[in-house]
Amino acid sequence: MSLHSTQLPVFISTIMQTINDNADEVAELDRAIGDGDHVINLQRGLLALEKIKDELSSLEWSPAFMKIGMTLMSTMGGASGSLFGTLFISMAKASNNKILDLTVFAQVFNQGVEAVKQRGKADLGEKTMLDTLIPVASALMTDAADDVNIVVALDNAKMAALNGMQSTKQMIATKGRASFLGDRAIGHIDAGARTSQLMICVIADVLLQELTTPA
Image 1: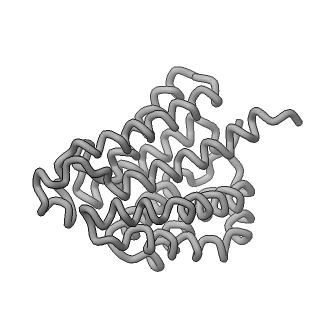
Image 2 (image 1 turned 180 degrees about the vertical axis):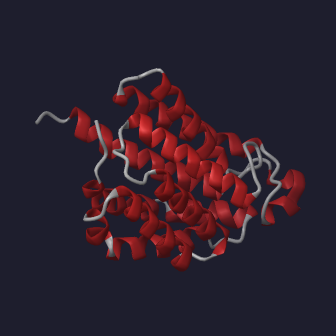
């Protein structure tokens, strides 16, 4: 199975709906240990993407990823705007002139996550969105190398995202406002890890529905 940019409008609309449906929960998570504005910033970025989704669907993957990254960086604000922007801009460079099957997408996404690590000067275990993104990238790379069936790979990516997000609950934060709380941050899930998990899982669900629905 190859991914096509014509799928972007449904990805964007479904992600936006999911984030809106979970906005109160995410805001509560963020107020507990963060600035409280993560979900508002994310909704602003998604609204900007919603307005250009038809244009995005007419582009090849590389320019589509670049436009997504630049749009998020200019509209979201906050640290997450910079990080999500970096993710997609790096993916744009990595996907140039490539057809996105599982193997290629795994490499493209992994390069994007590596760029986020460098931009945020963060890694696994620091109670950030990377605690969701890194396990997903790792799962995709492993499954691509093992030539795993795409349905299994998507299920594994969802599980990696869920486990990664939940792992942040027992972590002490070392980045952002939450880092000032010390042990008081323990017991709270990171809002960025939660929204990253929600978005990854909804994309996987859309693809799984396409794959498992009879033609």
